[in-house]
Amino acid sequence: MNNNDSIFTIKHNDQAPSKGSLLIAEPFMKDICFSRSVILLISCDEVGSVGFILNKALPINLNDFGGPFKSNRPLTLCLGGPVEPERVFYIHTLGDIVTDAKPIGGGLYYDGDLQVLLECLQYQKKDVPCVKFFSGYSGWTPELLKQEIEHDSWMVSHASIEAIMAADGESFWRDTLSAMGGKYRLWANYPPNPLLN
Image (cartoon, rainbow, N blue to C red; front, side, top):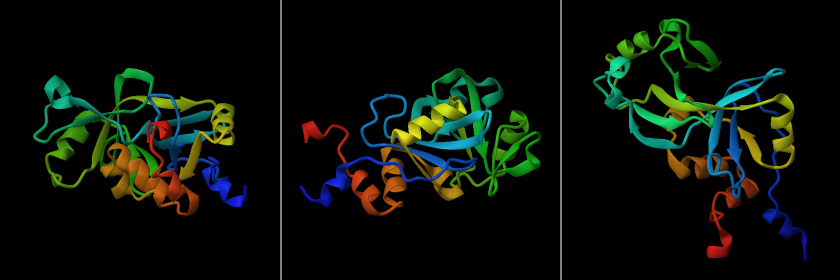
């Protein structure tokens, strides 16, 4: 065999995760929650890392729940992760006009006063995504995330705010992986189960 065989070996890209970076799942991850997912880290420090899966929309519209989620625009809910799935979290581009919003970086924020956020939505262009809602979150201790990256479960990357806010489905996973170039572009085209191909 020659060195070309190495293109089929899944290997992380030696980048350290940080707040605002993305974790891209390796192509054959078996965990149904994280399979072909892209996670935005909203915090990453010596205490641990927290993030939301960006590209797994649930068949639920928050508007159907009424109460605080009454809005004149559809409020799609995504699977944020397996931790605290009964809670709703959100990221947005509305800035600190949303009371108590916490900056992620580059104009992206998370959480803050829900009522203020929903009021702000009334005045935003409906065709420009400015908020994403999540059921639950994903979390790691510092050592656990480091180990998972070293075991090639995740690649670390970045994306524009526009791409993050529009992220949906496996195509976002493929596009984000392809944007890394080289062998990562090949991995983006791996079938979920190569034995069935």
